[in-house]
Length: 256
Length: 297
Image (cartoon, rainbow over all chains, first blue to last red; front, side, top):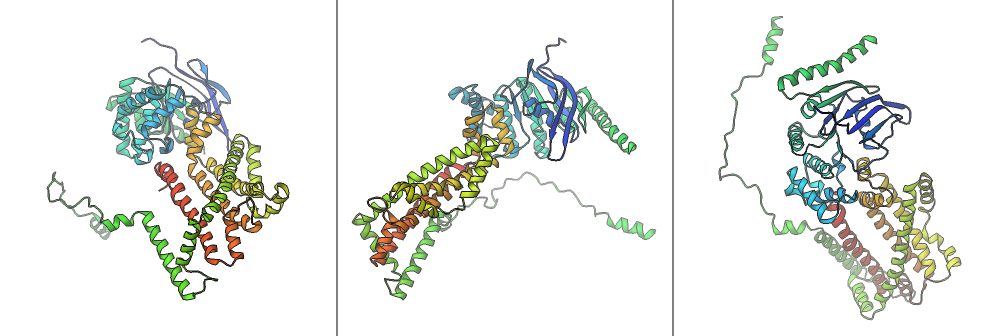
């Protein structure tokens, strides 16, 4: 196995943000590396700063300590080389059709224009099985379809890394399972690199090949594990992760 | 103890056989879709419902006018319509209406432009926001008509003073609505825009304006109504402004000559223009934009 240079390098990142009353430390000296083709999962309970960490990778926040490098370049601002897929359904521009939404992303970031943008958009819309709905407006789509458009948009940009922030959290359980399978199929197809945030252990094991486990208040790295695909091993891993997260809680209660 | 066990046994639900429905696509299915009747379809058209309301109002007006039987106080609907048609045919009313609309459009356009600049500044910096907020809270409640005497001193008895009060009545309403619309754009959409690498004017034009369009359109509508009211009132107060005078002057003139059906015809024109602008122009924009985008249900 040859080791290429990491695509994304997060080294010693501390993130702090201000609320009107407090200065909150979201993550404390978190380090990890994402390699090309990784399905890298940030997993942890709420309050472990996993979403904040991803926002920092997205360029929406600057670390108070440490740095984040993409292909060796320090990240300073949001940009189309790191496409975000959000949890919220309102991430599509309501005044554009599905096809325009995807094509506009390409045009706004000056990647492609006109016919080329449209062709690329249709190609990825087909990949997420929404060709029939290409000319529909987002408000006519179901939640799962909207997320698929957002994924198509992210992939059409062919970014260095796709940042997905609990994209399936707001979906019903059946749709979520289907979307997870589809995402894996898309990955088999194009082998993109994705940084995926979730709080579901099962989802992390299913989607990821590498899982970063974070503990809350403030977010620190607990472990970086390899995922498994065998259902039996998955159950074992799930229990192991649960224990890792749960043992801390037990200690905390014991301290108190 | 035994009673407790008995009670627990009683709480067990009864065993029932399972039910699995076999695949059936029998032709005897009930109707799934049924077309609506003609009347229901017609009633679903808002234009039709509004026309019904207008007709009802006209009938009530006519009946009341006939009962009163006093053209000086309250002419009938038919007398008003015939006066209206008479004035339209001899060209007086269209000329007056056009004189009003022309000034109105100039004032409105300047007001929209000014509001756009003010909100852009407000979005760019915090001091700009404070400036806009202070200005709107100071001037939005100030009636434009109250500025008319000053405007007359500054700009004289011409179109200049009318345009000045129009701009004043339009700008603040639109700026206020546009700004609050910008502020309520969802955080996710703003992040999406920045994700595309959009910034500055392109961010405002491609993300903020369409996302805030419902508020902006409301502002434009309110601004239009304010402008119309201000203009007619201003013309009524100081009469002839330009050479020919507008609709307000038409009303004033006919009142002086006690030609009340013509006064009503003038008022009817004001109402008609309002109806046309609201129902044709603004509703078309609404249908093509925020309704199609699902921003308004």
